[in-house]
Picture 1: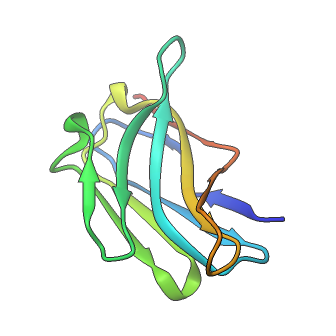
Picture 2: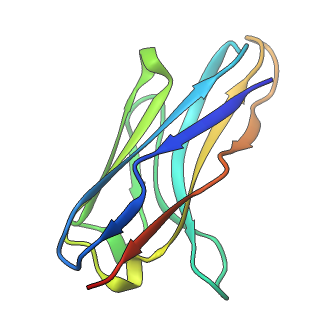
Length: 121
């Protein structure tokens, strides 16, 4: 059983910063792409940022220049540094990972339970 464990959410004032972390635990061969998505009330889940094994990154338009995604491959962990936060960044943030259970198996999508980020004065 593979689990994604998220941490780092919370309440922050506009202009503030937060750092999210997500680690994959369990029995698997490797983790391919990792990323963060978010979902605000009444809205669809959207990509925030993603990162490949080769450190190729992709960002949603609304967070470019403010958020930075990084990963520690050895620790199967992905990080999201969020700076200059805005009220519209308020959402539940979900970690996503593509898990390879064996060297030859196809990648399986895995989601974390979500962590709340609230930006408010």
